Amino acid sequence: MRKPLELSKRAQGVPASPTLAITARVKELKAAGEDIIGFGAGEPDFGTPEVIADAAVESLRAGQTRYAPTPGTPEAREAIAHKLRTENGIDCSAGDIIINNGAKFTVYLALQAIVNPGDVVLLPTPAWVSYKPMIELAGGVVREIPAGPTCDFKMTPADLAAHLDGDVRAIILNSPSNPCGTTYTPEEIRGLADVLSKHPHVAVIADEIYERLTYTQEPYLSMAAVPGMAEQTITINGLSKTFAMTGWRIGYACATGSGGAVIKAMTRMQSQMTSSITSFLMPSIPVALEQAMGEVEKMRQTFAARAEMIHGRISQWPGVTCPRPTGAFYVFPDVSGTFGRTSRGGVVINGAMDFASALLDEARVAVVPGEGFLGCGPNHVRLSFACSEADITEGCRRIEEWLGQLT
Image 1: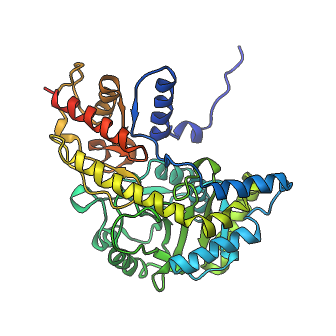
Image 2 (image 1 turned 90 degrees about the horizontal axis):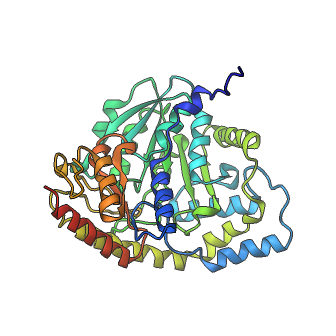
């Protein structure tokens, strides 16, 4: 009898993304004619600005369909470097930039470039679902720094210092946060930088994919812009969230330390994996960064209004608490006050997964259960407000009604 094909232990150990699973489930139900309100998708509900799409179409028609340089064209890399210099205060050049197939793959490449088996990677939690699997795929060991809702899901310098030792190789810092929707202030970033600067062997992977989507009066501060921190920081960003280009898969990294060793290593690995991003998308990068900021600001203002709207509604839910969202397009309410109660469909709610499943089945509203986000995640669900005001209003109404019927 033929022996069945066996999967690698690596493949067997990687969990499926719960956020993508929820999104796929919502699409299936909607395709079947179900009236579903989806708070699961982590992508803007806007179309890509026309000027960006036009640049890609023109490039395609002009025949820019051959292989491109692995780290990106010189023009695209310089446009990113210019953006980081002028907007973020990061002293860099085109040679310090690599363009990748989405910011998710950029984080993966950065970890592969700097982490050896057994190295500890610090992860403030709750954290995005893919960080832990990516750290482990690089052979790293996750060490959580828990930060709960009472501190707006943000670690303090003292929290950070207590987890640093000689085994730590890197820390992933995501601000604004997915799933929490909260943002470190410039003062808080400087406080963390002061601790990290005393540990120059620790690389900071600063995931700033939501940096344009902030809703306070305070300016955004990049970790690499803090004096003395550029040498140990790998800045991750991309076009997906800011420019409503999630399906385009354009991410990038900037690293100026170690004589360019990190970017060179990421380039070598990418050359063996995916080569460059799609070649005819390269001209869209300078266009997006230089010509679409007016539309980006309109989207930001819309998200800011939605943040206030959804937080105001959630604040009225019985037994639910939620920090105010200050960035990205997520809220992460604590629903543990409903645990032990029974839904109208007879489900005893013993965790966020039960909460989310019963809510979808009984109220036709999709949220992401917090179990995959580590830390205090099992007490929480994530709602994305990257949807219309009408959907926010109707979805929150359904949830309020459903919560009111718990016994």
